Image (cartoon, rainbow, N blue to C red; front, top):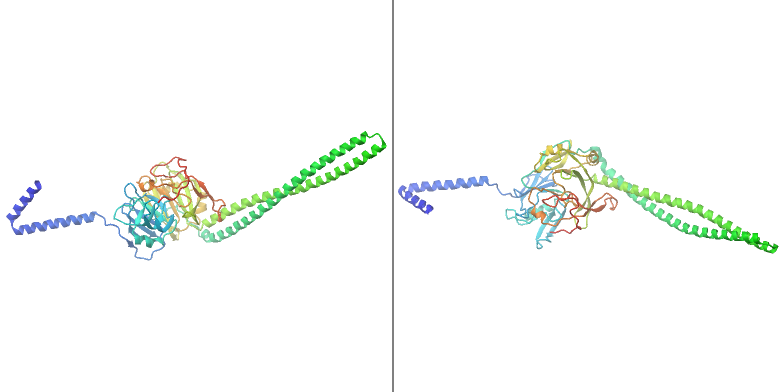
Length: 512
């Protein structure tokens, strides 16, 4: 009623004012509408679009997905190179925010969870099914937890990325900024230059040690077989000697009991033969014992040599492995939740069920000042070499301390620094976080860490991988990389942090 009355009054007024007034009012109304529309456009950010940097692009080092802006940006050593809109997980199936890496690539992937849905140019970042892939983009979050990219963009990108490439999913907009700090690795030029020759020499030494252990094991086995036959011979000779001694004792008694010359002569003859037999068997037994001792000593020496060779083989294999790993970028994760530092490097050994194997032989306590105070989640990446050694950037996706204060609070053990800093290469990284490692971190991953203060429905609803083999540094593999099954005690299931031993399930297949 109010609206109709107002309209009627306006109509009467316009009739009273005449056509010029009507034209003026119409113009004012149009201007007001245009101004309001312009203001709305200014306050509403433009939707993300595909873009390519106006320069020659290098190898991508990291990707940053912004949940807030629904955009992914890829960076090389000199800055951003590619941008595109994305569609992340919808409410209840949110894409988890955190730190990930490319684990596996499949050009023509089909989902095993969502009705064989086509996910072309898939790049997996968790084993329970979160991935980057081509897909429809409605202009808002709409996936089941994955990050959909434009089909053409995903195809163009697929051949340029690599296993282990960092993928950061941030709840807000984030980008790498130039950063320096005394705690960041400073490589040694001489160590880097000498690393390839050292790795080659140690590989030869490890191969020689492997041949030596094979020969030592054969010698020990031969000596063991020889001593086994000697033991049987000794037992037989000892039995014959015992019986000969008994016969001689019987002959002595018969001789003592003889009363006639004929009986004495017969007893003496038997005694002589018994004595000769006992003496011969005694000589044989003494000789056999001496021979057995010599061979037993040789067998013991062969066993000791085999043990020594085994130790040398393990030591040289470990040294060769470390020398080979020194040629790879190093990734470090420092967790305030577990008070530990984890170090990983890609061995480039493929695993039959997908992905490449990462060495995880370094996992030690780390000192963090004020351990009860939040530290945030920060990713420090060595982008390229420079005169100081390495040029670093920092990306912060979860506030606590700022990046500098976070590193100020951490003391990395010197023995760890000595093992990894001298040969640190571009693409090396240090991640500092309040979070423990996700239980999706396993033998086929670098690091997976999820922000527990962000929704992650698309991550929690998927079945995790647990009880998986991780690198042990023993000698199972040809290159000295071994693996054993181990629970991830400090794992991160979703929005809660588990107690040790909470998860005890067999290793599972992929579930998407």
